[in-house]
Amino acid sequence: MTNQSDTFKKVISHAKEYGFVFQSSEIYDGLSAVYDYAQNGVELKRNIREYWWKAMVQMNDNIVGLDAAIFMHPTTWKASGHVDAFNDPLIDNKDSKKRYRADVLIEDYCAKIELKIEKEIKKAEKRFGENFDKNEFINTNGRVLAYQDKITAILSRMGRSLENEDLADVKALIQELEISDPLTGSKNWTDVKQFNLMFGTKLGANAESAMDLYLRPETAQGIFVNFLNVQKTGRMKIPFGIAQTGKAFRNEIVARQFIFRMREFEQMELQFFIKPGTQAKWYEHWKEARMKWHISLGMGTDNYRFHDHDKLAHYADAAADIEFKFPFGFKELEGIHSRTDFDLSQHQTYSGKKLQYFDHEENKNYTPYVLETSIGLDRMFLAVFSNALTEETLDNHTTRTVLKLPAVLAPIKAAILPLVKKDGLPEVAKTIFNDLKWDFNVVYDEKDAVGRRYRRQDAVGTPFCITVDHDTLEDKCVTIRNRDSMEQQRVKIDDIKAIIENKVAMKHWLKEL
Ligand code: ATP
Image (cartoon, rainbow, N blue to C red; front, side):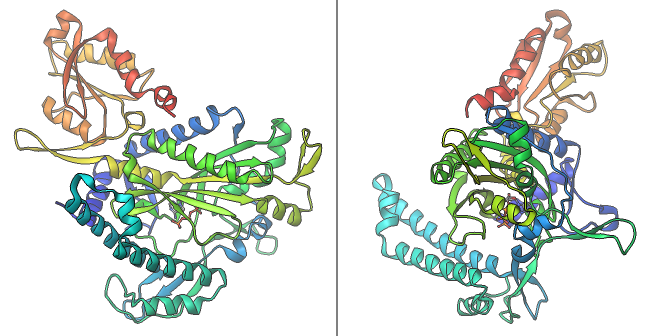
């Protein structure tokens, strides 16, 4: 059995070795928490983006897309609250000189208590065997209840203190819980301070007229300021949504978890505009719809859970995360927020322009409420990639590394392999390749023994290998090998396209939604 950090190290090294993710500016020793997507990574990332886009925009006739600029008028960030409130509480350890997010230290402490609960459940499962009722156990076992109460008490105190800007109490909590530096064990902490996460820059050539700008810390505001433009030109009727994917920038305090927390990353966001008072219904609707989207990829229902927020952001009246089981435990993958009319009202106030909707049925104007779903594309990439990376011991006691990506997301859909580099086999293989490339991202590979070529494709997650051998010249058939089962089937050349299409076409996957 490997432990969590070994698994995560393997994920990072596999991502580099097989051309998925490189550290930015590596030849200059890299740039902290900034990454580049390589030849296979860029395809996987595009496929995830497209799967999201189709599910949101193409499948819903009341959702349209937008691609707003990264630079926005600086007043945007005053109105949105980011200038004043987009802070993280940071704390330094005086001995190790390491910097941490105070809230994350406390949350990690609670995660450890949660592990204890899981241990109790496992023990009880063993003891009671088939008669074990997990829910009943969680709701009645004294020790589990005490652990849960402790977590609730800690998190609600933290939530209260952060909301009231009582940073002294956040430090007091860290001290009372005897939380130590995870790296060194030292408990010698500084006070907790607020740190604004926005990157500043300047627009304009000369110093006098230059304007201070921010790189956007979220894509959402580009949607809000365009709300009326889209509504009017698209003749949109409430409820309707605007979806956007794009870069966001945050000067994260701690960014040590590969592409989980980056300083430059990509978001995929939906802002869904609704009638005030209907937010509870739409909140449930989008929680369910987004969870379905995740489950549709077949990465295991047990790997997801909802986490309802105790501490609400300044704009929200309800919020939940979809958490995923990353190699380092359950962590936020996507946020679903009921944002009320906070953003549109703020932009009305700061711009002096009306951002209202005339509801013909009700015969009145109102400022719509907003339901947001917001997922990090890079974080989704990490979820998909880490979940897919598998090491298998085969019957002959050798191991194989295989990336069991959902076929719809795989960077390469099929590899076309002539068994040998002679006797006319490459020509047939190239004809097949040239035929398939119109529909799928495919590769042609003739180097090395066929077994090694299979392994190369397994490692990058290619669902199918198609081998052309001497019999192909006679029977017009090829061998098609399935990545996960390694089964090989003899099929007609004419049937290849339908076989691949059946497994990888986005429409088949979207129909499961
Ligand atoms: P966290 O609590 O992890 O900092 P957040 O609650 O600030 O995240 P949101 O502002 O709700 O995150 O952003 C929505 C989504 O954007 C998150 O669920 C996550 O997937 C992604 N995201 C946020 N910050 C980062 C980052 N620094 N790097 C990569 N993805 C991020």
